[in-house]
Figure 1 (cartoon, protein in one colour):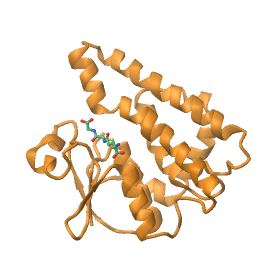
Figure 2 (figure 1 turned 90 degrees about the vertical axis):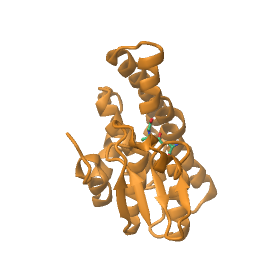
Figure 3 (figure 1 turned 180 degrees about the horizontal axis):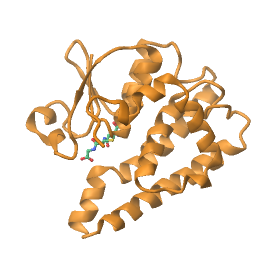
Figure 4 (figure 1 turned 45 degrees about the vertical axis):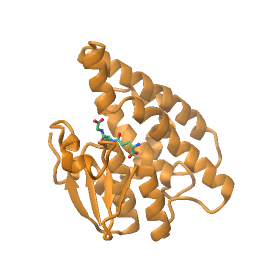
Length: 214
Ligand SMILES: N[C@@H](CCC(=O)N[C@@H](CS)C(=O)NCC(=O)O)C(=O)O
């Protein structure tokens, strides 16, 4: 399989963690988002959404949307699991995972920021303030969801990483770029520390990718 991503892409980062956790090795390819390489015709033929990541299977079939890719990896390679067994717990994990993936990231990714700058003449600081607002709105909810719930352990759900953590950690890296004040989120920070001690998360971080830039 081949994962087409970008070192700084939160969505590709989710998939890299899952591959590492499950011990699945794939070929890695990069599309430089700032140079617009994801809008080149050969990539649009792979993913008409012009977004990374895309996972190209050995059959040639292409999978897009990081959550769909995570679910696929979970189905072909169930151990270690990204979701707990109990249906209510599975719903809890998916619900947490959707805070960054459905309600934060889509309204502050690169194309949204570019649109704010180009169409609404926002300054860099104006666009950053927008992004910071939506990250904080989502993190306020995530923190409240995990802080007092006994199902929260070292990780967002229990003491093993789940899909929720795979989605939370890349959003925290992204929050750093927008200078979000993480002292507001003690439980999220504690979970982040647990994650980053795990080799699967550490190896997947942007700075450790072959296409990383400073
Ligand atoms: N919902 C998609 C989001 C993918 C996405 O937004 N990827 C970003 C990088 S993290 C991207 O390709 N951005 C390019 C752009 O905004 O032009 C997923 O989870 O895969």
